[in-house]
Image 1 (cartoon, helix red, strand yellow):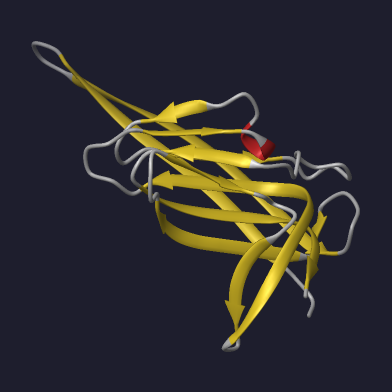
Image 2: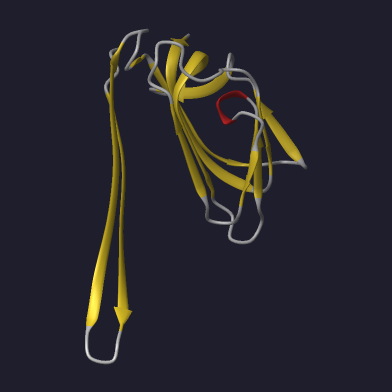
Length: 149
Protein backbone atom coordinates (compact mmCIF):
# COMPACT_ATOMS: atom_id res chain seq x y z
CA UNK A 1 0.00 0.00 0.00
CA UNK A 2 1.61 3.30 -1.11
CA UNK A 3 1.20 6.48 0.89
CA UNK A 4 0.84 10.08 -0.28
CA UNK A 5 -0.06 12.79 2.24
CA UNK A 6 -0.81 16.49 1.90
CA UNK A 7 -0.55 18.52 5.09
CA UNK A 8 -1.89 22.06 4.86
CA UNK A 9 -2.17 24.69 7.58
CA UNK A 10 -3.61 28.09 6.72
CA UNK A 11 -4.14 31.12 8.94
CA UNK A 12 -5.73 34.36 7.76
CA UNK A 13 -6.32 37.00 10.40
CA UNK A 14 -8.03 40.36 9.73
CA UNK A 15 -7.72 43.29 12.11
CA UNK A 16 -9.72 46.46 11.68
CA UNK A 17 -8.72 49.60 13.49
CA UNK A 18 -11.23 52.31 14.07
CA UNK A 19 -10.42 55.97 13.90
CA UNK A 20 -12.48 59.14 13.94
CA UNK A 21 -12.69 59.42 10.16
CA UNK A 22 -11.01 56.36 8.70
CA UNK A 23 -10.49 52.70 9.30
CA UNK A 24 -7.60 50.53 8.28
CA UNK A 25 -7.60 46.83 7.59
CA UNK A 26 -4.57 44.69 8.27
CA UNK A 27 -4.46 41.16 6.86
CA UNK A 28 -1.97 38.65 8.22
CA UNK A 29 -1.65 35.42 6.23
CA UNK A 30 0.47 32.41 7.21
CA UNK A 31 0.58 29.15 5.27
CA UNK A 32 2.38 25.85 5.70
CA UNK A 33 2.24 22.98 3.24
CA UNK A 34 4.02 19.64 3.29
CA UNK A 35 3.82 16.78 0.82
CA UNK A 36 4.95 13.33 1.87
CA UNK A 37 5.55 10.58 -0.65
CA UNK A 38 5.91 6.88 -0.02
CA UNK A 39 9.21 5.75 1.49
CA UNK A 40 11.67 6.08 4.36
CA UNK A 41 13.67 9.21 3.57
CA UNK A 42 13.20 12.93 3.88
CA UNK A 43 9.69 14.05 2.87
CA UNK A 44 8.51 10.43 2.91
CA UNK A 45 6.29 8.26 5.11
CA UNK A 46 4.74 4.80 4.98
CA UNK A 47 1.83 4.60 7.43
CA UNK A 48 -0.93 6.65 9.03
CA UNK A 49 -2.56 5.88 12.37
CA UNK A 50 -5.52 7.90 13.64
CA UNK A 51 -8.13 7.61 16.34
CA UNK A 52 -10.79 9.49 18.31
CA UNK A 53 -10.16 8.46 21.89
CA UNK A 54 -11.67 8.78 25.35
CA UNK A 55 -9.20 8.46 28.21
CA UNK A 56 -10.42 5.75 30.59
CA UNK A 57 -8.73 6.66 33.85
CA UNK A 58 -6.46 9.49 34.80
CA UNK A 59 -4.17 8.91 31.80
CA UNK A 60 -3.28 6.50 29.01
CA UNK A 61 -0.03 5.61 27.29
CA UNK A 62 0.19 4.94 23.56
CA UNK A 63 3.15 2.75 22.59
CA UNK A 64 3.89 3.91 19.06
CA UNK A 65 5.67 0.67 18.17
CA UNK A 66 2.43 -1.31 18.65
CA UNK A 67 -0.77 0.63 18.00
CA UNK A 68 -3.92 -1.37 17.35
CA UNK A 69 -6.14 -0.49 14.41
CA UNK A 70 -8.88 -1.96 12.24
CA UNK A 71 -8.37 -1.87 8.49
CA UNK A 72 -10.73 -3.42 5.96
CA UNK A 73 -12.53 -5.12 8.85
CA UNK A 74 -9.40 -6.83 10.21
CA UNK A 75 -7.47 -6.07 13.40
CA UNK A 76 -3.91 -4.97 12.65
CA UNK A 77 -0.91 -3.57 14.47
CA UNK A 78 0.75 -0.34 13.35
CA UNK A 79 4.41 -0.01 14.34
CA UNK A 80 5.82 3.50 13.90
CA UNK A 81 9.61 3.87 13.78
CA UNK A 82 9.68 7.61 13.00
CA UNK A 83 6.92 10.22 13.06
CA UNK A 84 6.87 12.85 10.31
CA UNK A 85 3.60 14.59 11.30
CA UNK A 86 1.78 14.49 14.63
CA UNK A 87 -1.62 16.13 15.14
CA UNK A 88 -3.62 16.15 18.35
CA UNK A 89 -6.85 17.98 19.17
CA UNK A 90 -8.49 18.25 22.55
CA UNK A 91 -12.05 17.12 21.78
CA UNK A 92 -13.46 17.88 25.23
CA UNK A 93 -15.57 20.99 25.87
CA UNK A 94 -14.18 21.85 29.32
CA UNK A 95 -11.28 19.57 30.39
CA UNK A 96 -7.66 20.36 29.51
CA UNK A 97 -5.52 17.71 27.82
CA UNK A 98 -1.86 17.08 28.67
CA UNK A 99 0.33 15.22 26.18
CA UNK A 100 3.99 14.22 26.57
CA UNK A 101 6.55 11.93 25.00
CA UNK A 102 7.34 10.73 21.52
CA UNK A 103 6.70 13.36 18.85
CA UNK A 104 5.27 15.73 21.50
CA UNK A 105 8.58 16.04 23.38
CA UNK A 106 8.61 17.07 27.03
CA UNK A 107 4.93 17.86 26.79
CA UNK A 108 2.39 20.61 27.11
CA UNK A 109 -1.24 21.24 27.97
CA UNK A 110 -3.97 21.87 25.41
CA UNK A 111 -6.98 23.76 26.76
CA UNK A 112 -10.45 22.58 25.74
CA UNK A 113 -10.85 22.87 21.96
CA UNK A 114 -7.13 23.49 21.30
CA UNK A 115 -4.98 21.61 18.78
CA UNK A 116 -1.30 21.15 18.02
CA UNK A 117 0.63 20.01 14.95
CA UNK A 118 4.27 18.95 14.84
CA UNK A 119 5.99 18.25 11.53
CA UNK A 120 9.53 17.08 10.85
CA UNK A 121 9.89 15.84 7.27
CA UNK A 122 13.61 15.10 7.68
CA UNK A 123 14.88 11.55 7.21
CA UNK A 124 14.94 10.99 11.00
CA UNK A 125 11.59 12.61 11.78
CA UNK A 126 10.24 12.90 15.32
CA UNK A 127 10.63 10.32 18.11
CA UNK A 128 8.34 7.30 17.85
CA UNK A 129 8.38 6.35 21.51
CA UNK A 130 5.51 6.20 24.01
CA UNK A 131 3.05 9.09 24.35
CA UNK A 132 1.20 9.73 27.61
CA UNK A 133 -2.13 11.55 27.45
CA UNK A 134 -3.99 12.91 30.47
CA UNK A 135 -7.46 14.40 30.03
CA UNK A 136 -10.83 13.30 28.73
CA UNK A 137 -11.20 13.04 24.93
CA UNK A 138 -9.00 13.71 21.93
CA UNK A 139 -8.39 13.11 18.24
CA UNK A 140 -4.92 12.08 17.10
CA UNK A 141 -3.25 11.51 13.71
CA UNK A 142 0.29 10.18 13.34
CA UNK A 143 1.98 9.90 9.93
CA UNK A 144 5.39 8.31 9.70
CA UNK A 145 7.66 5.45 8.83
CA UNK A 146 6.80 1.95 9.96
CA UNK A 147 4.77 -1.12 9.18
CA UNK A 148 1.25 -2.50 9.35
CA UNK A 149 0.92 -6.20 10.20
